[in-house]
Image (cartoon, rainbow, N blue to C red):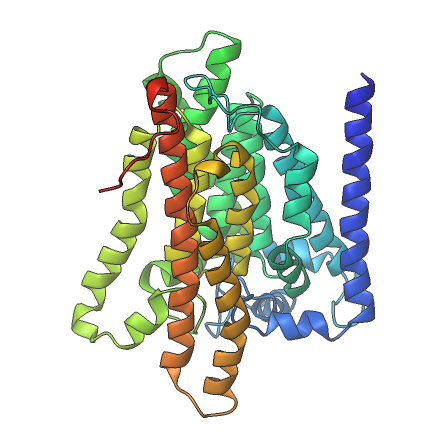
Length: 425
C-alpha cells in the first residue's frame, strides 16, 4: 500500500514540475509561443493555432469558419476555445488548457507503462521482462522531451489527438474497451489517421479482456468494437453538422488531408513531391501515398499478433514519417511510447545513429528554412533535403525497434539462439 502511495506522490510531483516549467516558459518568454506557432515544424495547415484563431473569429461572428479556406480543423474545437478568454488579451487560460492536456497524456502513458503490457501480454512474455522503466520514468521522458515542450508552447491542436490516442491505449489495457473505442473515435474525428490504429487496438482490448473474463470470439468482439467506433463517429459528425449547419467541414477538414490541396511546407515527405507533380498524375500518386500509409496496418497486426502494443508503437512511428501533414508533435508521441520497450533496447543496433540523425536534422532544419524563405540564398531543395534526413532518422528508429521486437520474440521461441548473431536479409 505504501509503495502505491509513494508512486502517486512521485507522479503528482512530476506533473507539478512539468506544469511549472511550462508556465515559467510561457511567463518569462512571452514572445516564444507566437514564435513557435509560426514555425512549420510545429504548426501545419490542419493543426495551426493561428488558423484556429481565424476559424474562431468567424465562428463567433456567425460566419462559417470554413469560409476563406483557412480553417481546416474539427468543428467541435470551436465551442471549446470559445469558452476561453481571448488568448491575445488573457493567454493564461489557453496556456493552462494545453498544460493540462500534456499532463493528461502523461498520466495515460504512466498507466500504460505500469501495466507491463509491453513486455508481458496474453500471448507473449519476454525473457527480458524485468528490464523495464517505471511509469514515472516513462511519463517524465514524455513531459520533459523538448519536442513535447515546444509543441505545448506552440499550441497546435494535435495535442488533443495525442491525448486521445494515449487514453485509448490505456483504456484498452485496463479492459475498458468501450471507453477505448470512444477515445479512438475522438482522435480519428480530430485527425482522421488514428482510425488506422483500430485493428491493433481491438486486438489489445480483446487480449486484455480475455485475461480477466470470458468474452465472445474475436470476430464478434471486433464487430462490436467496429460498430462502437462507427456510431461514435456518426454522433460526432451529427453534432458537427448541427454546430455548423452544413457538411462543408468534411471537405475542409478531411478532404484537405486526402487530396493535399494545401502545399504549405512541413517536415513531411508529401508537400515537395506534389509541388513537382504534374496534375495528370496527382490522383494516382495520392492513392499510392495513402495506400502505402495504410498498408502497414494489416501486415504488422498479423505478423506481431502476440504483441498488439508493439504494433501500435511501430504504427505511430510510421505515421509520424508518412502522414500528409506531420509535425514535431507526431514524433513526440512516437518517442513517448518507445521507452515502454526498454527491455528490447539491448537488441537495437542503430540507436546512436538514429538519435544523432534526428538531432542533426532538428538543429539544421530551422537554419535551412531560414536560408530558403528569409535569406533568399537557398531554395526549396534546402529545406526538403533536411526533412529527408529527419525522416531517415525516424525510419532508422522504427525499423530498429521492429527488429528488436521480432528478435526478442524469436529468442523466446528458440532459447538456444539467445546471444547468437543473426543476419538480416
